[in-house]
Length: 466
Image 1 (cartoon, rainbow, N blue to C red):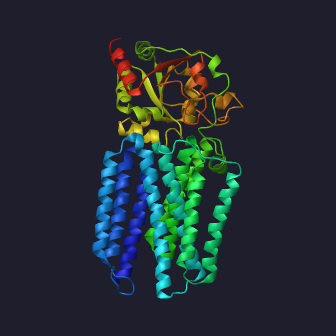
Image 2: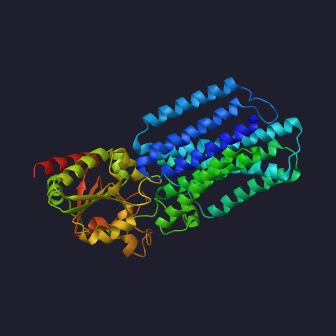
């Protein structure tokens, strides 16, 4: 078998590994195995690329530099993944995604430089692939870095002004015009493409900066899709099957997840990305005239310990407090007492897609106990106690009852319809969307103020003493 044919076979095997790995990521029990399978597929593709000659009989050059770069990247990735706390996982995902987009853009620019140095005339199709990879990858890079800054707290507010969408559209149009000139010329023009990339980087910043924190999970998913599309264009240019397949899989999965999350918020993708809804929404009027009821860990233990059916609603506050293991211990103690315990998962809870699933999987929560919003809501009127731990906007009944609320129409977990609700929260501050929560003031709701981990541990000790 010719080397190029053997490499094509290896690329097909690698592509299959990507697809199998992605499929296994859909279930917490198989997610780690899926990651390993996909990583093995990537390693196989890299080895094949480096070890086998091209169809022209040439071997890959600069092997030493490539290996050094791979070793450095592996070391940084390994240390980051081992040390990052669960609360910072969304930031890491956003940062790594941005690096993928930046890599696609850098490769496209280098190809344009090489074509210019060689005097190669670019066909319109080839020039279009290079330009698309450069522009989309640049938007993903700068947009992901802004998302990282927002999630990390480096950029604490959104910047908005009248006519912002028009200005952003003008920047995007200018980037497309420059890249269109490159394609129309047919000659390699690195300076013109670099100008297009600079505008694309600016657009990525201007695009994400106005978006509020409540919509950040959708933004991360959308930018992830952009990175996949940029890589796919690179694969088309190089006629590299594994690069093309990987890009298509990432792009399609990211866009599908974006659509699903937007649907879970009862909003269109365009509304999420361009409506600038977020933390400046403001608290509901009249909140200061309402009263709420607070309880102690001992009171909460009595409610939970003598209940028959308990539903736990986790949120980002649980991740901040790193209280997932304390929560599981409390749930186990309740189950030992004969209480039925389930976890209600909202599609956009947390700061990234699937954040709560990852958080609970880390604490070894049985997957069968995780119930999606649509499945748990019909049971809520029969639930004895709903324990809300660090969640806010996803249980706000104003989304269902108040047409004037910014959350109006967003599907929520109907915690307010349960017989009793216990909310563990540090304070009465609104959630990431900046909207006051009507749930806190309902007569069947009790507030347990304090750090989620500390309160869960205190409730557990009181349950044990019942």
